[in-house]
Amino acid sequence: MGKTIAEKILSTHAGKDLKAGDVAICNVDFCFGQDGTSSIIIDSFKKLGVEKAFDKNKFCMVIDHSAPSPNIGVSEIHKKMRTFAKTLDVGLYDVGCGVCHQLVPQNGHVTCGDLVLGADSHTCTYGAINVFSTGVGSTDLAIALASGKNWFKVPETIKVIVKGSLPKGVYSKDIILHIAKDIGSNGATYKSVEFYGDAISALSVDQRLTISNMAVEIGAKAGLMEADAKVLKWVRERSKKEPMPVKADPDAKYTAVKTYDISKLSPQIAKPHAVDNVANVEGLKDVKIDQAFVGTCTNGRFEDLQVAARILKGRTIHPGVRFVIAPASKEIYMEAVRAGLIDIFVKSGCAVVAPGCGPCVGTHNGVLADGEVAISTANRNFKGRMGNPNSFIYLASPATVAASALSGRISDPREHKGRL
Amino acid sequence: MKHFARRLKVQDNINTDYVISGRYKFKIQDPKELAKHIFEDIDPDFASRVTKGDILVAGENFGCGSSREQAPQALKQAGFYAVVAKSFARIFYRNAFNIGLLLVESETDFIDDGDELDLDIDNGKLKNKGKGLILNVKPVPDVMKKLLEDGGVIEHFKKHGGFKFE
Image (cartoon, rainbow over all chains, first blue to last red):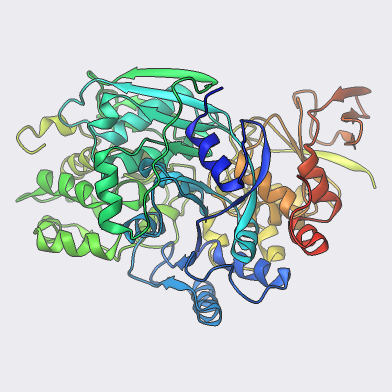
Protein backbone atom coordinates (compact mmCIF):
# COMPACT_ATOMS: atom_id res chain seq x y z
CA MET A 1 0.00 0.00 0.00
CA GLY A 2 1.35 3.43 -0.96
CA LYS A 3 1.92 6.18 1.56
CA THR A 4 0.89 9.81 1.95
CA ILE A 5 3.40 12.56 2.75
CA ALA A 6 2.30 12.51 6.41
CA GLU A 7 2.76 8.72 6.67
CA LYS A 8 6.22 8.95 5.12
CA ILE A 9 7.56 11.84 7.21
CA LEU A 10 6.23 10.36 10.46
CA SER A 11 7.60 6.90 9.56
CA THR A 12 11.05 8.34 8.94
CA HIS A 13 11.00 10.16 12.26
CA ALA A 14 9.72 7.15 14.20
CA GLY A 15 12.25 4.82 12.62
CA LYS A 16 9.53 2.38 11.67
CA ASP A 17 6.81 1.82 9.13
CA LEU A 18 3.62 3.69 10.03
CA LYS A 19 0.19 4.05 8.50
CA ALA A 20 -2.77 6.30 9.25
CA GLY A 21 -4.18 5.55 12.71
CA ASP A 22 -0.90 4.35 14.22
CA VAL A 23 0.47 6.04 17.33
CA ALA A 24 4.23 6.45 17.55
CA ILE A 25 7.01 8.36 19.26
CA CYS A 26 8.82 10.53 16.72
CA ASN A 27 12.00 12.59 16.75
CA VAL A 28 11.40 16.28 16.18
CA ASP A 29 13.77 18.31 13.97
CA PHE A 30 12.85 21.73 15.36
CA CYS A 31 10.45 23.23 17.89
CA PHE A 32 9.58 26.69 19.17
CA GLY A 33 7.21 28.87 21.17
CA GLN A 34 5.97 32.44 21.02
CA ASP A 35 5.13 34.99 23.72
CA GLY A 36 1.55 33.79 24.12
CA THR A 37 2.65 30.20 24.81
CA SER A 38 6.24 30.32 26.10
CA SER A 39 5.38 31.20 29.67
CA ILE A 40 3.68 27.81 30.13
CA ILE A 41 6.44 26.08 28.09
CA ILE A 42 8.93 27.41 30.64
CA ASP A 43 6.78 26.37 33.62
CA SER A 44 6.18 22.88 32.19
CA PHE A 45 9.85 22.45 31.27
CA LYS A 46 10.83 23.26 34.84
CA LYS A 47 8.24 20.82 36.20
CA LEU A 48 9.80 18.07 34.08
CA GLY A 49 12.95 18.56 36.13
CA VAL A 50 15.21 18.73 33.07
CA GLU A 51 18.22 21.06 33.01
CA LYS A 52 18.98 21.37 29.30
CA ALA A 53 17.30 21.60 25.92
CA PHE A 54 17.60 18.34 23.97
CA ASP A 55 19.54 20.36 21.40
CA LYS A 56 19.99 24.07 21.90
CA ASN A 57 20.10 24.67 18.14
CA LYS A 58 16.74 23.01 17.55
CA PHE A 59 14.58 25.30 19.66
CA CYS A 60 13.85 28.99 19.75
CA MET A 61 11.36 31.45 21.18
CA VAL A 62 9.82 34.38 19.33
CA ILE A 63 8.39 37.55 20.86
CA ASP A 64 5.82 38.45 18.21
CA HIS A 65 2.25 38.39 19.54
CA SER A 66 2.51 41.55 21.65
CA ALA A 67 5.73 43.22 20.55
CA PRO A 68 6.69 45.76 21.75
CA SER A 69 4.85 45.00 24.99
CA PRO A 70 1.65 46.96 25.56
CA ASN A 71 1.35 46.35 29.35
CA ILE A 72 3.13 45.17 32.48
CA GLY A 73 1.71 41.62 32.38
CA VAL A 74 3.15 41.02 28.90
CA SER A 75 6.43 42.72 29.85
CA GLU A 76 6.84 40.21 32.69
CA ILE A 77 6.29 37.32 30.28
CA HIS A 78 8.84 38.77 27.85
CA LYS A 79 11.34 39.16 30.71
CA LYS A 80 10.75 35.53 31.75
CA MET A 81 11.44 34.41 28.15
CA ARG A 82 14.67 36.41 27.92
CA THR A 83 15.94 34.96 31.21
CA PHE A 84 15.04 31.40 30.14
CA ALA A 85 16.76 31.87 26.75
CA LYS A 86 19.96 32.93 28.53
CA THR A 87 19.79 30.11 31.06
CA LEU A 88 19.30 27.46 28.38
CA ASP A 89 21.52 29.21 25.85
CA VAL A 90 18.80 28.94 23.20
CA GLY A 91 17.73 31.34 20.46
CA LEU A 92 15.34 34.21 21.12
CA TYR A 93 13.90 36.47 18.46
CA ASP A 94 13.10 39.59 20.42
CA VAL A 95 10.82 42.57 19.73
CA GLY A 96 11.08 43.76 16.14
CA CYS A 97 12.33 40.51 14.54
CA GLY A 98 8.94 39.43 13.22
CA VAL A 99 6.30 36.67 13.29
CA CYS A 100 7.44 33.15 14.24
CA HIS A 101 5.95 31.60 11.09
CA GLN A 102 7.98 33.91 8.92
CA LEU A 103 11.20 33.65 10.94
CA VAL A 104 11.29 29.85 11.29
CA PRO A 105 11.35 29.09 7.53
CA GLN A 106 13.00 32.36 6.43
CA ASN A 107 15.97 31.87 8.75
CA GLY A 108 16.53 28.31 7.63
CA HIS A 109 15.51 26.47 10.80
CA VAL A 110 13.48 23.98 8.76
CA THR A 111 13.75 22.23 5.42
CA CYS A 112 11.85 19.76 3.24
CA GLY A 113 11.05 16.46 4.94
CA ASP A 114 11.43 17.84 8.49
CA LEU A 115 9.09 17.16 11.39
CA VAL A 116 8.42 20.36 13.34
CA LEU A 117 6.37 21.30 16.40
CA GLY A 118 5.39 24.84 17.32
CA ALA A 119 3.42 26.12 20.27
CA ASP A 120 1.17 28.05 17.91
CA SER A 121 -1.71 26.71 15.88
CA HIS A 122 -0.46 28.21 12.58
CA THR A 123 2.70 26.10 12.67
CA CYS A 124 1.12 24.21 9.75
CA THR A 125 2.40 27.09 7.54
CA TYR A 126 5.60 25.26 6.50
CA GLY A 127 3.62 22.48 4.91
CA ALA A 128 4.02 24.68 1.82
CA ILE A 129 7.74 23.89 1.82
CA ASN A 130 7.17 20.18 2.37
CA VAL A 131 7.63 20.21 6.16
CA PHE A 132 5.30 18.21 8.41
CA SER A 133 4.78 20.98 10.92
CA THR A 134 1.94 21.19 13.37
CA GLY A 135 0.76 23.25 16.31
CA VAL A 136 0.69 21.90 19.85
CA GLY A 137 0.13 23.33 23.30
CA SER A 138 2.85 24.55 25.61
CA THR A 139 3.27 21.36 27.65
CA ASP A 140 3.58 19.22 24.51
CA LEU A 141 6.23 21.66 23.34
CA ALA A 142 8.06 21.44 26.69
CA ILE A 143 8.19 17.64 26.28
CA ALA A 144 9.76 18.10 22.84
CA LEU A 145 12.21 20.68 24.19
CA ALA A 146 13.29 18.32 26.97
CA SER A 147 13.46 15.08 24.98
CA GLY A 148 13.54 15.91 21.27
CA LYS A 149 10.47 13.72 20.89
CA ASN A 150 6.73 13.60 21.20
CA TRP A 151 3.96 11.17 20.40
CA PHE A 152 2.00 11.43 17.17
CA LYS A 153 -1.09 9.80 15.84
CA VAL A 154 -0.58 9.36 12.11
CA PRO A 155 -3.39 11.30 10.41
CA GLU A 156 -5.51 10.28 7.51
CA THR A 157 -5.17 12.57 4.49
CA ILE A 158 -7.51 14.57 2.28
CA LYS A 159 -6.23 15.32 -1.21
CA VAL A 160 -7.09 18.77 -2.56
CA ILE A 161 -6.52 19.51 -6.24
CA VAL A 162 -6.68 23.15 -7.35
CA LYS A 163 -6.96 23.64 -11.10
CA GLY A 164 -7.01 26.60 -13.47
CA SER A 165 -5.21 29.92 -13.70
CA LEU A 166 -5.98 32.67 -11.19
CA PRO A 167 -7.86 35.66 -12.62
CA LYS A 168 -6.26 39.11 -12.14
CA GLY A 169 -7.00 40.50 -8.70
CA VAL A 170 -7.49 37.04 -7.19
CA TYR A 171 -4.79 35.50 -5.01
CA SER A 172 -3.88 32.45 -2.96
CA LYS A 173 -5.80 33.92 0.01
CA ASP A 174 -8.95 33.76 -2.09
CA ILE A 175 -8.21 30.12 -2.95
CA ILE A 176 -7.90 29.03 0.67
CA LEU A 177 -10.98 31.01 1.76
CA HIS A 178 -12.90 29.33 -1.07
CA ILE A 179 -11.69 25.92 0.13
CA ALA A 180 -12.57 26.80 3.76
CA LYS A 181 -16.10 27.64 2.68
CA ASP A 182 -16.49 24.25 1.04
CA ILE A 183 -14.72 22.00 3.56
CA GLY A 184 -15.89 23.92 6.66
CA SER A 185 -14.08 24.80 9.85
CA ASN A 186 -13.94 21.21 11.07
CA GLY A 187 -14.00 19.36 7.74
CA ALA A 188 -10.38 18.26 8.08
CA THR A 189 -10.14 17.86 11.86
CA TYR A 190 -7.45 15.33 12.93
CA LYS A 191 -6.46 15.02 9.26
CA SER A 192 -3.61 16.07 7.02
CA VAL A 193 -4.34 17.87 3.75
CA GLU A 194 -2.18 17.59 0.61
CA PHE A 195 -2.51 20.35 -1.99
CA TYR A 196 -1.89 19.67 -5.68
CA GLY A 197 -2.76 21.05 -9.09
CA ASP A 198 -1.53 23.50 -11.70
CA ALA A 199 -2.94 26.44 -9.75
CA ILE A 200 -0.72 25.56 -6.77
CA SER A 201 2.35 24.95 -8.96
CA ALA A 202 1.91 28.39 -10.53
CA LEU A 203 2.07 30.14 -7.12
CA SER A 204 5.24 31.59 -5.62
CA VAL A 205 6.46 30.14 -2.33
CA ASP A 206 5.17 33.28 -0.50
CA GLN A 207 1.69 32.67 -1.87
CA ARG A 208 1.77 28.95 -1.07
CA LEU A 209 2.64 29.69 2.57
CA THR A 210 -0.67 31.60 2.80
CA ILE A 211 -2.60 28.45 1.86
CA SER A 212 -0.80 26.06 4.21
CA ASN A 213 -1.04 28.67 6.99
CA MET A 214 -4.82 28.40 6.94
CA ALA A 215 -4.99 24.58 6.88
CA VAL A 216 -5.71 24.71 10.63
CA GLU A 217 -8.78 26.85 9.89
CA ILE A 218 -10.39 23.74 8.39
CA GLY A 219 -9.20 21.74 11.39
CA ALA A 220 -6.19 20.15 9.71
CA LYS A 221 -3.08 18.96 11.49
CA ALA A 222 -0.90 19.75 8.46
CA GLY A 223 -1.32 21.37 5.02
CA LEU A 224 1.33 19.76 2.86
CA MET A 225 2.65 20.48 -0.62
CA GLU A 226 5.35 18.76 -2.68
CA ALA A 227 8.77 20.34 -3.02
CA ASP A 228 9.17 21.48 -6.61
CA ALA A 229 12.10 23.44 -8.06
CA LYS A 230 10.74 26.73 -6.63
CA VAL A 231 10.59 25.30 -3.10
CA LEU A 232 14.03 23.68 -3.32
CA LYS A 233 15.57 26.94 -4.51
CA TRP A 234 13.77 28.84 -1.73
CA VAL A 235 14.92 26.54 1.09
CA ARG A 236 18.48 26.18 -0.24
CA GLU A 237 18.86 29.95 -0.23
CA ARG A 238 17.87 30.02 3.42
CA SER A 239 18.86 26.78 5.14
CA LYS A 240 22.14 24.93 5.43
CA LYS A 241 20.25 21.72 6.11
CA GLU A 242 20.02 19.30 3.20
CA PRO A 243 16.41 19.14 1.98
CA MET A 244 14.88 15.65 1.91
CA PRO A 245 11.80 16.16 -0.30
CA VAL A 246 8.95 13.76 0.31
CA LYS A 247 6.33 12.81 -2.28
CA ALA A 248 3.22 10.78 -1.76
CA ASP A 249 3.07 7.42 -3.55
CA PRO A 250 0.76 7.23 -6.58
CA ASP A 251 -1.32 4.60 -4.75
CA ALA A 252 -1.45 6.45 -1.42
CA LYS A 253 -4.77 6.17 0.36
CA TYR A 254 -6.88 9.34 0.80
CA THR A 255 -10.09 9.65 2.78
CA ALA A 256 -11.41 12.17 0.25
CA VAL A 257 -10.32 13.89 -2.95
CA LYS A 258 -11.60 17.44 -3.53
CA THR A 259 -11.13 19.29 -6.80
CA TYR A 260 -11.55 23.05 -7.28
CA ASP A 261 -11.41 25.06 -10.50
CA ILE A 262 -10.42 28.63 -9.65
CA SER A 263 -10.41 30.05 -13.21
CA LYS A 264 -13.51 32.13 -12.53
CA LEU A 265 -13.06 32.71 -8.80
CA SER A 266 -14.04 36.13 -7.39
CA PRO A 267 -12.12 37.75 -4.54
CA GLN A 268 -13.33 35.91 -1.41
CA ILE A 269 -14.24 37.36 1.96
CA ALA A 270 -14.81 35.59 5.29
CA LYS A 271 -17.57 37.41 7.14
CA PRO A 272 -17.92 37.71 10.93
CA HIS A 273 -17.49 35.59 13.05
CA ALA A 274 -16.26 32.43 11.31
CA VAL A 275 -13.50 31.69 8.81
CA ASP A 276 -15.75 29.40 6.76
CA ASN A 277 -18.50 32.05 6.51
CA VAL A 278 -17.25 33.02 3.05
CA ALA A 279 -18.86 35.09 0.29
CA ASN A 280 -17.86 36.68 -3.02
CA VAL A 281 -16.78 40.31 -2.76
CA GLU A 282 -19.59 41.37 -5.12
CA GLY A 283 -22.24 40.83 -2.46
CA LEU A 284 -20.50 42.83 0.28
CA LYS A 285 -19.81 46.17 -1.33
CA ASP A 286 -22.12 48.11 0.99
CA VAL A 287 -20.16 47.22 4.11
CA LYS A 288 -18.50 50.32 5.55
CA ILE A 289 -15.12 49.79 7.22
CA ASP A 290 -13.29 51.60 10.02
CA GLN A 291 -9.96 49.85 9.94
CA ALA A 292 -7.87 47.97 7.39
CA PHE A 293 -4.94 45.70 8.21
CA VAL A 294 -2.28 44.05 6.06
CA GLY A 295 0.10 41.73 7.85
CA THR A 296 0.27 38.47 9.89
CA CYS A 297 1.67 35.00 9.27
CA THR A 298 -0.95 34.64 6.55
CA ASN A 299 -0.31 37.74 4.45
CA GLY A 300 2.50 39.90 5.82
CA ARG A 301 5.15 38.83 3.31
CA PHE A 302 6.94 40.97 0.73
CA GLU A 303 4.66 40.03 -2.16
CA ASP A 304 1.62 40.87 -0.02
CA LEU A 305 3.02 44.31 0.76
CA GLN A 306 3.84 44.76 -2.92
CA VAL A 307 0.27 43.95 -3.97
CA ALA A 308 -1.16 46.46 -1.47
CA ALA A 309 1.40 49.16 -2.39
CA ARG A 310 0.59 48.94 -6.11
CA ILE A 311 -3.04 49.73 -5.39
CA LEU A 312 -2.19 52.54 -2.94
CA LYS A 313 0.64 54.23 -4.85
CA GLY A 314 0.09 57.97 -5.20
CA ARG A 315 -3.33 57.82 -3.51
CA THR A 316 -4.71 58.65 -0.09
CA ILE A 317 -6.76 56.24 2.00
CA HIS A 318 -10.35 57.12 2.87
CA PRO A 319 -10.54 59.73 5.67
CA GLY A 320 -12.77 57.45 7.77
CA VAL A 321 -10.29 54.55 7.72
CA ARG A 322 -7.18 53.68 9.73
CA PHE A 323 -4.85 51.42 7.76
CA VAL A 324 -2.32 49.40 9.78
CA ILE A 325 0.55 47.58 8.06
CA ALA A 326 2.74 45.05 9.90
CA PRO A 327 5.55 43.45 7.86
CA ALA A 328 5.97 39.81 8.90
CA SER A 329 9.69 40.19 9.59
CA LYS A 330 12.55 42.67 9.84
CA GLU A 331 13.97 41.32 6.56
CA ILE A 332 10.65 41.91 4.80
CA TYR A 333 10.45 45.37 6.35
CA MET A 334 13.91 46.24 5.00
CA GLU A 335 13.12 44.79 1.60
CA ALA A 336 9.97 46.91 1.54
CA VAL A 337 12.00 50.00 2.47
CA ARG A 338 14.45 49.32 -0.37
CA ALA A 339 11.61 48.78 -2.84
CA GLY A 340 9.95 52.05 -1.83
CA LEU A 341 6.83 50.34 -0.46
CA ILE A 342 7.03 51.85 3.03
CA ASP A 343 7.26 55.29 1.44
CA ILE A 344 4.06 54.56 -0.51
CA PHE A 345 2.26 53.31 2.63
CA VAL A 346 3.21 56.23 4.82
CA LYS A 347 2.40 58.83 2.14
CA SER A 348 -1.01 57.27 1.55
CA GLY A 349 -1.84 57.54 5.25
CA CYS A 350 -1.04 54.07 6.59
CA ALA A 351 0.43 53.39 10.03
CA VAL A 352 3.34 50.97 9.62
CA VAL A 353 3.93 49.13 12.91
CA ALA A 354 6.77 46.93 14.15
CA PRO A 355 7.26 43.51 12.49
CA GLY A 356 5.14 41.01 14.43
CA CYS A 357 1.55 39.83 14.70
CA GLY A 358 0.22 43.40 14.76
CA PRO A 359 -3.43 43.84 15.75
CA CYS A 360 -4.39 40.25 14.71
CA VAL A 361 -4.61 38.89 18.27
CA GLY A 362 -6.20 41.95 19.82
CA THR A 363 -3.57 42.94 22.33
CA HIS A 364 -2.37 46.20 20.75
CA ASN A 365 -1.69 48.06 17.48
CA GLY A 366 -5.33 48.67 16.56
CA VAL A 367 -7.99 47.40 18.96
CA LEU A 368 -11.46 48.17 17.60
CA ALA A 369 -14.19 50.21 19.31
CA ASP A 370 -17.75 48.92 19.83
CA GLY A 371 -19.58 48.44 16.55
CA GLU A 372 -16.50 49.02 14.40
CA VAL A 373 -15.65 46.98 11.33
CA ALA A 374 -12.20 45.82 10.22
CA ILE A 375 -11.06 44.23 7.00
CA SER A 376 -7.90 42.23 7.57
CA THR A 377 -5.49 39.86 5.84
CA ALA A 378 -5.29 37.70 8.97
CA ASN A 379 -6.55 34.13 9.32
CA ARG A 380 -9.18 34.45 12.08
CA ASN A 381 -12.25 36.61 12.46
CA PHE A 382 -13.60 35.12 15.68
CA LYS A 383 -15.71 37.40 17.82
CA GLY A 384 -13.35 39.46 19.96
CA ARG A 385 -10.25 38.33 18.09
CA MET A 386 -9.01 41.89 17.55
CA GLY A 387 -9.66 42.77 21.18
CA ASN A 388 -13.34 43.75 21.22
CA PRO A 389 -16.23 41.26 21.18
CA ASN A 390 -18.53 44.02 19.95
CA SER A 391 -16.63 44.56 16.69
CA PHE A 392 -16.71 42.83 13.30
CA ILE A 393 -13.84 41.33 11.30
CA TYR A 394 -13.82 40.51 7.58
CA LEU A 395 -10.92 38.50 6.15
CA ALA A 396 -9.59 39.05 2.63
CA SER A 397 -6.50 39.25 0.41
CA PRO A 398 -4.06 42.20 0.65
CA ALA A 399 -5.49 43.54 -2.66
CA THR A 400 -9.07 43.52 -1.37
CA VAL A 401 -7.97 45.14 1.89
CA ALA A 402 -6.06 47.91 0.08
CA ALA A 403 -8.94 48.57 -2.32
CA SER A 404 -11.34 48.77 0.63
CA ALA A 405 -9.08 51.19 2.54
CA LEU A 406 -9.23 53.60 -0.41
CA SER A 407 -13.03 53.62 -0.68
CA GLY A 408 -13.98 53.19 2.99
CA ARG A 409 -16.19 50.24 2.01
CA ILE A 410 -15.48 46.61 1.14
CA SER A 411 -14.31 46.88 -2.44
CA ASP A 412 -13.35 44.70 -5.37
CA PRO A 413 -9.64 45.00 -6.21
CA ARG A 414 -10.45 44.20 -9.84
CA GLU A 415 -11.72 47.78 -10.11
CA HIS A 416 -8.07 48.84 -9.99
CA LYS A 417 -7.08 47.48 -13.39
CA GLY A 418 -3.53 48.30 -14.35
CA ARG A 419 -2.47 48.14 -10.70
CA LEU A 420 -2.89 44.40 -10.17
CA MET B 1 -19.16 14.00 43.82
CA LYS B 2 -22.24 14.86 41.78
CA HIS B 3 -21.74 16.27 38.28
CA PHE B 4 -24.09 18.72 36.62
CA ALA B 5 -24.21 19.78 32.97
CA ARG B 6 -23.33 23.35 32.03
CA ARG B 7 -24.27 24.49 28.56
CA LEU B 8 -23.23 27.67 26.77
CA LYS B 9 -25.46 29.91 24.67
CA VAL B 10 -23.30 28.94 21.67
CA GLN B 11 -22.91 25.24 20.89
CA ASP B 12 -20.69 24.59 17.83
CA ASN B 13 -17.19 25.76 16.90
CA ILE B 14 -16.35 27.22 20.29
CA ASN B 15 -12.76 28.35 19.73
CA THR B 16 -10.08 28.83 22.36
CA ASP B 17 -10.36 32.62 21.97
CA TYR B 18 -13.90 32.20 23.30
CA VAL B 19 -12.74 29.93 26.13
CA ILE B 20 -10.26 32.58 27.24
CA SER B 21 -9.82 35.80 25.30
CA GLY B 22 -6.42 37.03 24.11
CA ARG B 23 -7.16 40.16 26.12
CA TYR B 24 -6.42 38.13 29.25
CA LYS B 25 -4.26 35.23 28.26
CA PHE B 26 -1.40 37.34 26.97
CA LYS B 27 -0.98 39.22 30.21
CA ILE B 28 -2.30 37.00 33.02
CA GLN B 29 -0.27 33.95 34.04
CA ASP B 30 -2.34 32.86 37.05
CA PRO B 31 -4.92 30.18 35.99
CA LYS B 32 -7.19 31.23 38.89
CA GLU B 33 -7.42 34.75 37.49
CA LEU B 34 -7.97 33.41 33.95
CA ALA B 35 -10.77 31.13 35.19
CA LYS B 36 -12.84 34.19 36.12
CA HIS B 37 -13.01 35.25 32.47
CA ILE B 38 -13.93 32.02 30.66
CA PHE B 39 -16.39 32.46 27.77
CA GLU B 40 -16.73 36.15 28.58
CA ASP B 41 -17.13 37.23 24.93
CA ILE B 42 -19.97 34.81 24.12
CA ASP B 43 -21.71 34.23 27.46
CA PRO B 44 -20.66 36.98 29.91
CA ASP B 45 -22.07 35.58 33.17
CA PHE B 46 -21.19 31.95 32.42
CA ALA B 47 -18.15 31.81 34.74
CA SER B 48 -20.34 32.70 37.72
CA ARG B 49 -22.67 29.75 37.04
CA VAL B 50 -19.94 27.09 37.24
CA THR B 51 -19.52 25.02 40.39
CA LYS B 52 -16.85 22.45 41.15
CA GLY B 53 -17.46 19.10 39.50
CA ASP B 54 -19.58 20.43 36.64
CA ILE B 55 -19.37 18.94 33.16
CA LEU B 56 -19.20 21.38 30.27
CA VAL B 57 -21.43 20.24 27.41
CA ALA B 58 -21.00 21.48 23.83
CA GLY B 59 -21.54 20.66 20.16
CA GLU B 60 -19.11 20.16 17.27
CA ASN B 61 -15.45 21.20 17.02
CA PHE B 62 -14.99 22.38 20.59
CA GLY B 63 -11.63 24.08 21.19
CA CYS B 64 -10.77 25.03 17.61
CA GLY B 65 -8.37 27.86 16.83
CA SER B 66 -5.39 29.00 18.85
CA SER B 67 -3.14 26.44 20.56
CA ARG B 68 -3.37 28.29 23.89
CA GLU B 69 -3.07 25.81 26.74
CA GLN B 70 -4.54 28.49 28.98
CA ALA B 71 -7.92 27.34 27.59
CA PRO B 72 -8.06 23.86 29.17
CA GLN B 73 -6.16 25.17 32.21
CA ALA B 74 -8.78 27.85 32.82
CA LEU B 75 -11.59 25.28 32.44
CA LYS B 76 -9.93 22.92 34.89
CA GLN B 77 -9.27 25.75 37.31
CA ALA B 78 -12.90 26.90 37.01
CA GLY B 79 -13.84 23.51 38.46
CA PHE B 80 -14.89 21.48 35.43
CA TYR B 81 -14.53 17.75 35.89
CA ALA B 82 -14.84 17.04 32.16
CA VAL B 83 -15.96 18.42 28.81
CA VAL B 84 -18.45 16.39 26.76
CA ALA B 85 -18.82 17.47 23.12
CA LYS B 86 -19.80 16.01 19.76
CA SER B 87 -16.24 16.57 18.53
CA PHE B 88 -13.04 18.37 19.57
CA ALA B 89 -10.32 20.21 17.68
CA ARG B 90 -7.04 18.32 17.84
CA ILE B 91 -4.68 20.73 19.61
CA PHE B 92 -7.21 21.36 22.37
CA TYR B 93 -7.77 17.60 22.64
CA ARG B 94 -4.08 16.95 23.37
CA ASN B 95 -3.75 19.97 25.63
CA ALA B 96 -6.65 18.92 27.84
CA PHE B 97 -5.41 15.39 28.49
CA ASN B 98 -1.85 16.70 28.91
CA ILE B 99 -2.99 18.74 31.90
CA GLY B 100 -5.36 16.06 33.21
CA LEU B 101 -8.71 17.37 31.98
CA LEU B 102 -11.03 14.61 30.73
CA LEU B 103 -12.71 15.05 27.32
CA VAL B 104 -15.43 12.74 26.05
CA GLU B 105 -16.89 12.63 22.55
CA SER B 106 -20.60 11.94 22.61
CA GLU B 107 -23.97 12.93 21.24
CA THR B 108 -25.01 15.88 23.41
CA ASP B 109 -28.41 17.01 22.12
CA PHE B 110 -30.23 15.22 24.92
CA ILE B 111 -28.45 17.10 27.69
CA ASP B 112 -29.89 20.29 29.17
CA ASP B 113 -28.17 22.80 31.42
CA GLY B 114 -28.37 21.54 35.01
CA ASP B 115 -28.97 17.85 34.20
CA GLU B 116 -27.18 15.50 36.57
CA LEU B 117 -24.67 13.41 34.60
CA ASP B 118 -22.58 10.36 35.36
CA LEU B 119 -19.56 9.43 33.23
CA ASP B 120 -18.31 5.85 33.18
CA ILE B 121 -15.19 5.96 31.02
CA ASP B 122 -14.20 2.33 31.52
CA ASN B 123 -17.49 1.11 30.10
CA GLY B 124 -18.00 4.02 27.69
CA LYS B 125 -21.32 5.18 29.15
CA LEU B 126 -22.81 8.59 29.80
CA LYS B 127 -25.79 8.54 32.11
CA ASN B 128 -28.24 11.43 32.22
CA LYS B 129 -29.76 10.72 35.62
CA GLY B 130 -32.51 13.32 35.50
CA LYS B 131 -33.80 12.10 32.15
CA GLY B 132 -33.16 8.42 32.84
CA LEU B 133 -31.06 8.02 29.68
CA ILE B 134 -27.88 6.01 29.15
CA LEU B 135 -25.75 6.69 26.10
CA ASN B 136 -22.73 4.95 24.61
CA VAL B 137 -19.89 7.42 24.19
CA LYS B 138 -16.85 7.21 21.92
CA PRO B 139 -14.12 5.29 23.80
CA VAL B 140 -11.34 7.44 25.26
CA PRO B 141 -8.15 6.37 23.39
CA ASP B 142 -5.68 4.27 25.40
CA VAL B 143 -2.97 6.91 25.12
CA MET B 144 -5.25 9.52 26.64
CA LYS B 145 -6.42 7.17 29.40
CA LYS B 146 -2.81 6.52 30.31
CA LEU B 147 -2.02 10.24 30.49
CA LEU B 148 -5.09 10.85 32.60
CA GLU B 149 -4.29 7.97 34.99
CA ASP B 150 -0.83 9.41 35.57
CA GLY B 151 -2.26 12.88 36.18
CA GLY B 152 -1.16 14.49 32.92
CA VAL B 153 1.75 14.25 30.52
CA ILE B 154 4.37 15.83 32.81
CA GLU B 155 3.67 13.31 35.57
CA HIS B 156 3.55 10.50 32.99
CA PHE B 157 6.90 11.55 31.58
CA LYS B 158 8.54 11.84 35.01
CA LYS B 159 7.10 8.56 36.25
CA HIS B 160 8.27 6.52 33.26
CA GLY B 161 11.31 8.54 32.20
CA GLY B 162 9.67 9.10 28.83
CA PHE B 163 6.54 7.95 27.04
CA LYS B 164 5.25 4.53 27.89
CA PHE B 165 2.38 3.54 25.69
CA GLU B 166 3.74 2.19 22.45
